[in-house]
Image (cartoon, rainbow, N blue to C red; front, side):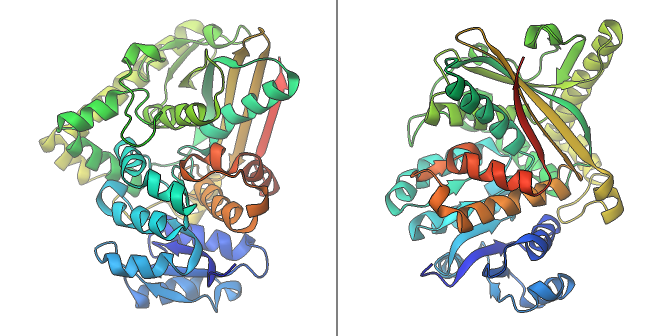
Length: 412
């Protein structure tokens, strides 16, 4: 409370940054001290004017990722910095370093495994020493994944059912558009993947499961494949059909495995993610194969410069996104299944209205920032480079339910 602000939204002039600021203007508790930050005071002022009366007096902070001194000044003024400035591999290093050094809690929307690995190695020890909670992946990537497994862990603990075994999240339904920022992150990762050390991180299923300077050399076969077709009945006997790969599993699974490394979900815990494409065996198998082929072709095209140049002409640019009507029509629903050491079966579920990558993500990021700023007495005594579940688990779950998310756990 000695800081001037509770939350600073850095990148408020960007598309998702403004959506997050708007959510906070509508939903933050009275008295929450919020400021908007970005490179242009004029653009920040224009954003503030669009947010309505509750934001009319929010201070504006000029800060630039290319000017570290401005970032140091910004983070020193707030309890929490909420940053949407990506791709994080390109623009995020100075921000997370400043936050860790100042003991300022930090939330972002990164979906970039190498950036989280950078954060662990370069600022993890500093953050632990200063008491900063560095929490990556606080949007659709990877809150549903991370809380889904965490809720199963908490329920199994409460029931005395033993540790979790094979655990799989299924995206059962989803409607939304890929953001320009996410696509730009894929562009940057495709460029970085030319470096052999970066490829090693990207292909390692436990790339984020260790501490600073302790990269686990895990075989890819030690965890479920991110690209395989999966028989639904192998996930749980109540299911049928064939499931397709989920396009964000290669990031989300690493976040969940980091939560396991910090909380210990059980000695036999393994985690994968897939997407439902129907229950009929033949039809779903054909559809799943088509999805897998499409993902492979898309990633290949983004990795090859001539085709990437062509795609750049038609794909959304950073700062672009669907209009409000389209965002309101979006939704997502996921279910996560597990079998515990004692053989008991559980399913967690999360669903919400709103485009997953935009409207729902703004809620998840905004509520993550509010959890760190307003619910500090409910948070575990942990610092360093954490995950949403490890840093905020139960408190964030309660906030999302209050915000309209449907979250549940049942024994099967």
